[in-house]
Every structure is written in C-alpha cells, then in structure tokens.
Image 1: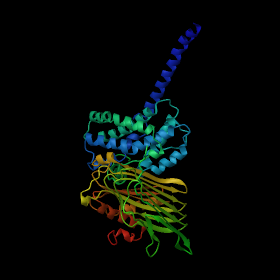
Image 2: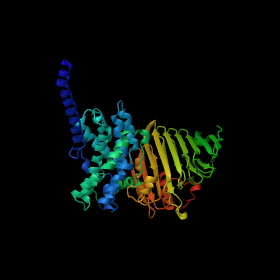
Image 3: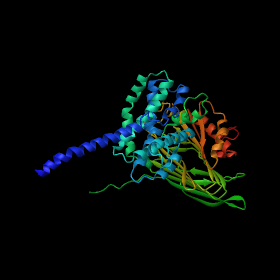
Image 4: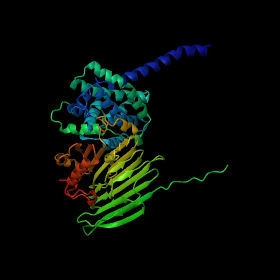
Length: 228
Length: 277
C-alpha cells in the first residue's frame, strides 16, 4: 500500500517534469529555427534570385518544384546530413567543418553558411569555435532530447520558408500562395528529414546542376537584392 | 541436389599506371604499368609530358572495373587524358566501376582532362576520382557527362551514375563533390534546378593555392550558344560548371576553359586544335 502511495505521489510529478522538459526543448528548437531568430537568413536566396530574374522560376508551381529539388537532391539535403552528423555523440566538429568546407559548391554559399553560422552561434553558444551554419545548429541541438527527424525537419522547413520568402518578395506571388507552397512541401521535408537522420558521409551527394549554376551566376547578377 | 554450374559472364578488368619525376629539371617517366583492358600511351609532345589512357574493352558494363593511376613527383607538371569517350552500357547486374587516383608532389600540377562519359540506357556507373595534392601542388580537372547520343535519338530514362571527386591538399579535404543521377533525376529532367532540359553537364575544378584568382579570366571567355555556364572561386578553388543541350557545344566550352587554365594546347585526342580560341 505504501509503495502504491509513493508511486501515486511521484509518477505524476516525474511524468509532469518529462513532459515539461520535452515541451521546453521543442520550444527552444522552434525558437532557434524560426524565421524570427535574428541570424539574417532572409538576406540569402541561394541562387533563387538568379532563377527568378531570368524567368525560370515564375510562379507558385515553379517555386515548389525548385524548392523540392533543393530538398531532395540539393544543398538542403546535404546540409541536413551534416547537421545530423554534428549531433551524433562524439562528433568531431573540427573534422566535420573541414569536410563541409570541401563540399561547398560556391563562393557565396561559403559566405552564407559562415555568416549564418556566426550569427547563430553568437545567439546560442558564443564561446564555441566558429562553425558553418548547419554544423552550428547540430552542435547547439546535440543535447536536445528530441527525435532526430524532428530537428532535421524543422531545419529543412526553415530553409524552405527562407526560399518561399525570397519568392514572395520578388514574384507576383501573395503570402497566401507562398504559405500554400510551404504546406505542400511538408511531405517532402518529412521524407528528406527521415532519410538524412539515417545518413552518413557516404550518403553525401547532390544533383542540382541548374540550382548550382544559379547560385554561381548570382555572383555576377547585375541588380541584386539578396546577398546570395 | 545437382547444382547448375555458375556461368560467370566475362568481365573486363583494367589497371594502368603512370609516374613522372623531375630529373635535372626535366620530367621523366619513372613508372609505367598496364594490365587487362587498360592501356596508357605516351605521345611525343613538346613541353610537359602527356599520358593518354585507353580502355580497350570499348565500354563498361556490370562488374567491369577500370583503374587509372598517376603519380607526379615534386615540381612535375603533366597532362593526362583519355583516348576516346568512355561509354557506360546496359548494366543489369550491378555497377561498372572506374577508379582514378592521382598523387601530385609539392609544387607539381596535374591537368586531368578525360574525354566525355556517355551514359547509355540502363547503364550503371560508379566512378571515384581521388586526387592528393602535396603542399604547393595544384590540379586542373575537367569532366563532362552526356546522356545518350542525341544524334541517334537516344534519351536514357534509367541510366545511373554515382560520380565522386575528392581532392585533398596536404591530407586535408579541399574540394569534394559527388553527383548521383538516377531515374528519379531523369524523370525531372526538365526542372530548372536539375538538368533544365539539358542532356550534358560538365565541371571544371582548379584546386590549389591561389586558384580563386583565375575566376575573372574564365568569366571573360565566350560561352557557346545554348550552353549555360558559370564560374565561382574562393579559398584555393576555382570551379566552373556548365549545362548544355548537346555534347559538342559543351566540349567547346570545356576546351576553352581548360586551355585558358593550362595555358597550353589541349591534348591531340581532344581533336580541337584551333577551335578553342
């Protein structure tokens, strides 16, 4: 009886704490991956500005296809794998940073990931050695007891939202339509996150030659609003 | 139970190796080996030595393995290419593999200009290119892939390619890319972020200290009609990429870029003398 009484006393409390901690971790994750987290992501189009400027991305359908390709075959996918590798116990962040650097596809991508990483770290772990953005997110979320796929999905959704916001400012595309594109990408984001959670160095590959060219050509785009 | 004898299909194997070192200020041949379907030819050229690799099997299919190896001593500049386009044919029982390995000594420079790789329907090719640069060394690599033979009306829908390139400088990764092409990519071939309706793609990578300084010169080169190209450079890397609706204009573009980066005539096997300027 005494035993049962003690369980009655403690279980709800322990359960309460666990739920509280999980909610707190989730809130923190949403906070640091929210577009409102001031790291300057809104200034980067990752080459989408070039594709819009030359008319290759002209409407909601084009935009959705572009972002889906970046998620399934492009830099968003490889960034998610890097993030995931940085979260794993015993991850060698310096070696991952070397590897990430070698994987960079263009000068502007190097600038973007370094700038975002610096801003992100200054708000999360200011004393850490500098890391590019995906690795910085990995390091900052390493201790969060949340499902890996959830962390990666929120990261990927932030990338997709960043690209949607570029298009909404540029194309004749309303906020409502932009949000519809983002919602439609949810299954792609979830699937990419699931795959990245189980991936390692051997799974790093990409095939987005059109998006790579657009990101590179952005360096010489005459009139540009975005930094990349 | 009586077991049927397993009839292994004839697979081709080939390994060719070449090495050069400086002797009294001149690059001399120090290593030459060839086995199976791989050969290496050493044309008599003025200036830096040239090695021409050749796959005598005529093309690659399931289980085939082909290896090309190059070793340049300290201070050696050499060019290596292939005799003809590499063809990846139908491969239903696993991938064909190509391994290209190069070591470049301190202050040396390798120019690796293989001819295009043509992917036929249902082909499956895994290629691994590993280039290790010693301090002060550099590499110019130019490679292209063409999907089928457009003149023959070919448009492969199920070709597969895994193409990994890995350049290290003094043991640290400097430039890595891995491209994976499969039926899923080919089904989305019209998407602007992917092939944008093109059938040929290429990359030129110049890696080594100061490589980024080449960006402006490459951007100034004319781009053949129909080719989409761009150049970027930073921190020891200068990378140029292109997409094209056909293999020929892409080859013209590659020739121009390679000629500008190497400040030397292209290997004769490219058959582009006088066409790159």
